[in-house]
Amino acid sequence: MATEQYKREWMVQQQIANRGVDDERVLQAMQKVPRHLFVPPDVRDLAYSDCPVGIGHGQTISQPYIVGLITALLDVKANHRVLDVGTGSGYQAAILAELAAEIHSIERYPELAESAKETLESLGYQNVLIHTGDGTCGYPDGAPYDRIVVGASAPAVPEPLLNQLGPDGRLVIPVGSRFSQRLGIWDNTQKGFKHTASTPVIFVPLIGKHGWGN
Image (cartoon, rainbow, N blue to C red; front, side, top):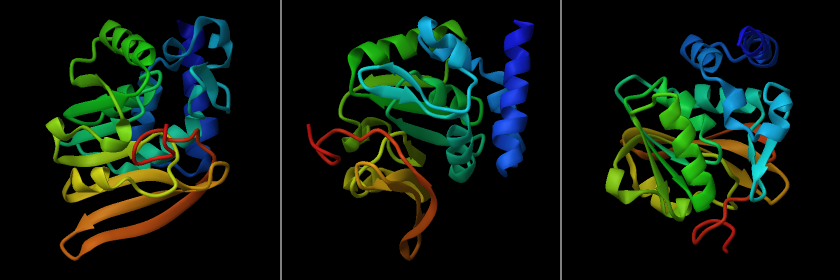
């Protein structure tokens, strides 16, 4: 336990804070959440490494720095309702659960959704609701959302996600080609959506009706 705690402290300081992520709430959340419990046992030794880790079905748990950066860009407040598209291992949902009031997380692979749900429940998270379905369509039953984050890349922003964003809401999603994207921030303002481009990234493709297709 002490070893894993030390690894988390090292991860947060060396991989995240030292690269410019200075949101204290985000850093504290990443210090608290046991990342090693969100990766398969056979690759658990890679949990705190500076790289993404495979979790099955061609999906990954993102590099710690990228999780920290995206969460900081999202600017989550304690009273927010957040939609997390692409549950994967459930790690991003756990980080968000430390920061917001309610998390809806949607995953297209039932096996990953069930595994993430079990992990989150075992850790005592009661403000995360896991759903199975096409994340490119969002989750209308929980809308509107104060924040939406997408953990896979799209060729363009899925329209349903923009439609489910509430007033003053923010969406963070990697957009671009299959093998090269930029993190994009869409803010829902009184004058319409304001787009800001951020860091170059490479994410797995967002599969679905409003993503890269099936």
